[in-house]
Amino acid sequence: MNPKSELLPIITALKNDTGGGALIRRRVDPSSPVDVYLGVEPATGHLGVLLGVHRRHVPATRDLPGGTGFALRTHVIKDDIKDVINLGIFCTDTACEDIFLHFMKDIVSHLLTERSSEAALRAFLARVSLWQRFFVQGRNVYLTEEAQLGLFGELLVMRDLIIRAVGASAAVEAWKGPEGKPQDFTMASGALEVKCTRAKAGGRIPISNELQLDERPFGYMVLIHVSVSQGGTGNPSLTDMVEGVRALLSGPALLTFDDKLIAAGFLDAHADRYRESRFLLRDIDFFDVRDNFPRVRPGDLRVGVVEISYKIDVAAIMPFKIEQPDVEARLIR
Image (cartoon, rainbow, N blue to C red; front, side):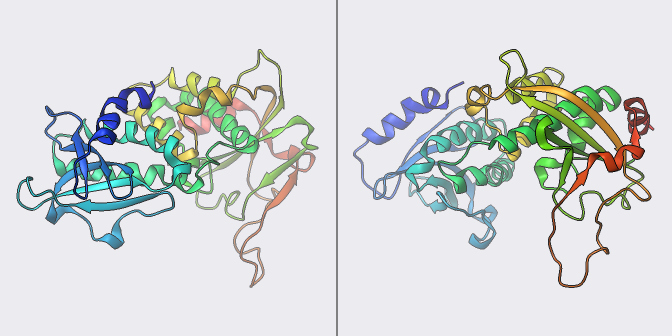
């Protein structure tokens, strides 16, 4: 679904409008109970999405999301109902224009599902926060090879292990990697940390920080090491993995999954690009993080050491290896 083609008629009409004023706008769906507009600021040429809300519901400027490449601004239109303000997000950097068009399609589709301006405002601010990273990155919005590899591993584990053990909704809820949590999956019973490396990496697993393998807040922790080699036209890509997980989801679980994909840096607009990198699964091993498992945890660091990363030798953790049925049993208990 191409946002350029869907929104192009409105955008074209806006740009061809020679009217004056601080804002030229067009309502997206007159039948909607929510006032959603596309608009252009003639003075700057900045294109934006606006939502009509009552003045009392608009957050203070300091509480609004901010970033590079976009700006949140308010406009008051004299013909509007008294005390209604148009809160808009505008693209302010040409490097972000392509991403902004995809963002417009996303936010408009979400806003039009709401039945009140208050609910629409919450959705508006949530979508802006979710998409912030893409505006900040400008042209560099694609996942790196390493990021693709990491996401591939997480989705593989979700598809082949967690969904099978606890169901689709619980699996998606447990996926915390896109939220920036230390572990990739956390549940009431325990935590899973997934590391996906190339087979030629020399048998070493990179650990990002001292919290990642700290099992103490959980009933158990399992380190899952996914080893892959890259290449081969018949092997799955990150996009294939996304599509495979989506095929197992529906309803709210699917919507939440799609939002988490965006938070992880994956956009459907880039799906074809990610088909170029393909991965062959070599091994998947499970390790019980307990007792003398080699790791660094908070409390192990000397005063003054505030940030670390390190690598674990796979050979050194083989005594802690467990089998997949053991992991599944822990997930469902």
